Image 1 (cartoon, rainbow, N blue to C red):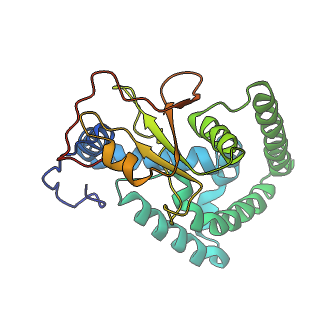
Image 2: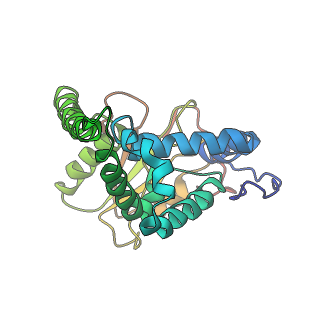
Length: 254
């Protein structure tokens, strides 16, 4: 799929792996079909939620004064230049903007300084607002901490880490086959391996419908073979067994 907004759409490639087919030919293709304005708007909102939110938006009410502040002209230019680069690509997660963090913090501190200078009928309104910002951040941190305590993280990544720990405590080498349901969410991927796969204690592989697993099992015949049904709750480590009604085709490789 194209990276930049102006790149043309290429002909699709098709895969025997259902997760690849879903991700590349459905999820990403739908992303490409989104309009430039829609994508750029969503990216900007995601960045704003991650880096600023409501509390840190307050100081930037002084943005008109900051544009006239010669001391931060270059940070403003650098920030806007990077923002244009981020908004020109189709794929965005907030951490992609991490190189802008130092510039953002510099602009935030200067915005707070400008805010402190605001007065209303001679009263220091800006000082009050800067203190409100700090209080809101402290309250937000407490709410997030309490929420994390009440609702411990329970995700596929946490469950996968639990199974990895379980396997690390079992002597020998292991091969783990991930079996996905037909409606598996492609972003919840269990199959990740170390760079040196053959030397790894744990090797992960994906079961592909209608593809013979025999060559894979033969190659890793010195390992204990396990299975994880990734879309069943809770996920458990089981001894591997072929999928019911599986079609074996020696001409295809997993």
